Amino acid sequence: MPRLVVFSNRVPLGDKPSGGLVVALNDTMASQGGLWIGTETVKERSGNGPDALVNHPGATFERLAMGLTPEEQDGYYLGYSNSVLWPLFHGRADLLSVSVGQFTTYTSVNRRLAELSAPHLRPDDTIWIHDYHLIPLAHELRKLGVRNPIGFFLHIPFPVANGIRALSDNAEFLDWFSAYDLVGLQTQRDVANFIGAFRTLGRAELLSDGRLRFNNDFIQVASFPIGIDATGFRTAAEQAPELPEITTSAQKVMIGVDRLDYSKGLPHRLRGFQAFLRERHAEADRIAFLQIAPPTREDVQAYKDIRRDLEQLSGEVNGEFGDIGYMPVQYIHRSIPRARLAGLFRRADIALVTPLNDGMNLVAKEYVAAQDEADPGVLILSRFAGAAEQLAEGALLINPYDAASIADGITRAVTMPLDERRTRHAAMWSEIARHDNDWWTATFLQSLARAAASRRTSESF
Ligand code: ADP
Ligand code: G6P
Image (cartoon, rainbow, N blue to C red; front, top):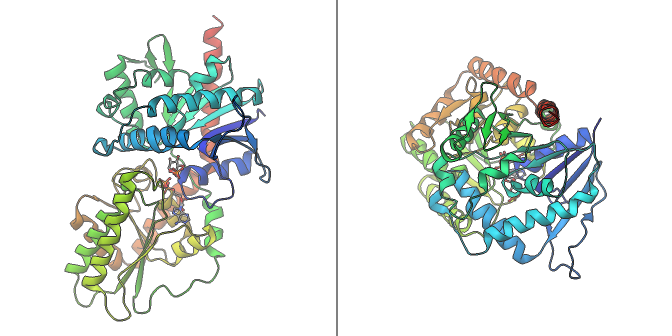
């Protein structure tokens, strides 16, 4: 079997992972083995020439990381990746923050990563590049003569053509995708956006076999909804350590777990809960809402703003509805161990997942996996999460922009009879167990092997 070489900006280097990409790729690498190459921040690089990649032993697979200087971290990670591409891809051009030099640093970091990695590659490796930080990487590797199969997977939504138009300094954006044998996206919606953008902006032609003819190249694109280790997570939830009492006088627990990102709709969620509390009948169960939101990308202004908004709003809700022994909102601003998280999901009667736009949302799938099937909880899910394409049968789909829609979802969840909860849970469990992380990895890699073989055949004629 060819060795799998995975590239992503973030590699798990001992810190607690909270982010879908690292969680999912950890599962993939744990079962496949191989080499995982990424970046890490360093104070300064030694010497004048490009440094070597640093080896991080201690995992069941090999890990190599390229050191980023603070300037590179600023321009490439906080800058172009997270202040330009992230907001644009999530449909938030209003949050774009463009500064001089970001784009150059983004491309030069990708070029250096290609140069440092190429000597580590073997001719029969399969290369799989992940996410928006590294879109130009295949293009850079091809320039260095790398002929291996190279696949790309985007973990976040693909934007509509107008989103890409806002990348004013980036004429090469569409071209970068031509270097891949296969482009994988999360959902059908993303594939439609991708094809639409290439037709509108690149005059690409959609062929009857599903490929795009773009300039003199062909691009193969398809959706591969990312999965979780469903049975592993269920077992972790069953065996989770004892949990402390969540609250003294609440009968039901509702949970939210997200990086503190503006794409997650956290203020909308609190406004929805507030609307529910305002209109609920006196006899309704008391609900404690536990929101775990670890910090993320805190040096970007938009993330500072969302933190402030959330703190204000949870204070407001607690002031309005709190009582002695009852705190409606408990907000925890840090990461917690996965085993404990799994236990909390199992303990919670409801999960409230309200992104305004999300590639997939693994939290929704983890919540389903963690449930006791004899007495499962209810998933309230935004129709704008990628996961909604797969979980529509079992989740209560809501519109996060409409507080009344969230409030209505909570009311339905609180009052849902046991047999309906079981039926809904069974539909979702069967979907996430069938399309789990192993399925995702295997399906993508098989499609990549086919796509690369057909490219080689067409090149030899
Ligand atoms: P994203 O990739 O945008 O962060 P996902 O929902 O797809 O969103 O993935 C988030 C992952 O990070 C999940 O596996 C989730 O369990 C994990 N996670 C999120 N918040 C925490 C936290 N506070 N502690 C531990 N793990 C977390
Ligand atoms: C999302 C992105 C990942 C990223 C993760 C955490 O899942 O798709 O690429 O790793 O968020 O964000 P961070 O900036 O901490 O890596």
